[in-house]
Amino acid sequence: MMATSRSAQTVFSRRQLLGMGAAVVAGTLPAGGYRVRLAGAVTLVDPPWSRHPETVTSLSEEATYLTDLHAATDRVRMVTLGASMEGRAIRAVIVGPPRTRDQVRAANNCMIFGSHHGDEWAGREAIFEHMRDHAFGSGTETIVYLPTVSPDGVALGQRDLADGFDPNRHWSQSGVDRRTDGGAYLPEQQCLRQAILLYHPKIVLDTHEYTSTSNTFRFDSGTSNASGTPEAVVDVDGAVIAAMRNVATAAGYTAVAYGGPVPDDGATQAFKHGGIPALFTESAQRAAGGLALRRAQQLNALNAFQAYVQSNAAALASVAASVTWYSGFTPTVTDP
Ligand SMILES: [Zn+2]
Image (cartoon, rainbow, N blue to C red; front, side, top):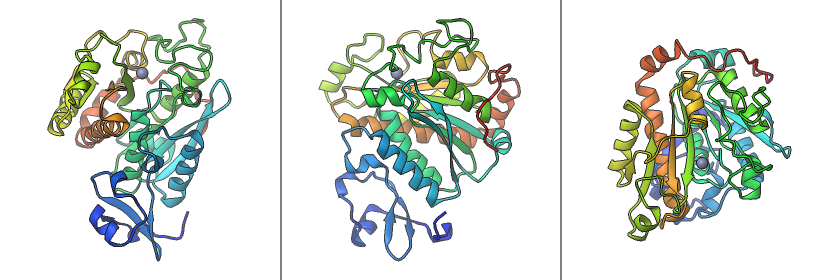
């Protein structure tokens, strides 16, 4: 913990920060307020992308950033869930009021995944900003973030895991790796399952992107992007997707439902099979607005998702009463 007390935190507008001589580039600042710590000098805790808005955050930058966030507030804790095929750490970042694992389970909570596919960055980049805002905010819900489900994929710049398997396409609805039918999960899936076993999320959001070559979606992202139309694809059923789509539309984005069937072997369907309300977002990888637009779309969706969780705690708890969370499996990672 740093010496700075949270009571010293406040929120400044971009204009105020620049007026104080903050060493930031105006063009990199998102539109919202900034939570900063005052310890004699203004300290910004900005996500790494603020230094390079159009390129992916490296794994080493991520590690440093998460460590900084963890040190800055007792609302952040990190748990290493395991390692990828190539030995890279996969982490859960638990953000909200300080709670034990059991308290997290009992609390209003949710889980958000980034870079399930390693070359789909926008959700991951948005997560870095969203977790910062929640860390320095006052929200009472616990959000468990797995910002980088596939660090190998991020490092290698590829959709699939290091061995070429698609982590999102090898879930079975029972939670068993379809390749073996013996429960020998891919390491990345083991980590994801560990997180579910540990924290019992009441709803899950998995962030993805899609390519312009796909005809599966209602949008042809190539033509839509050529017209400069911001677009985002959001797919869930029921109230939460309606809420997220409304927020996306209000922000000027074109939000549509997934145009084709959600794959039965996708993680989203696997979560739903266990009874966990699950949804995913997809921004278009080749959007004319670049990563900045896609990140903004994903952040918009994350904020709407969080607002839904905040406003529907009772409904989520009611659903959770019958969720199984992969019962029958035992967590091997501990988090007191
Ligand atoms: Zn994907």
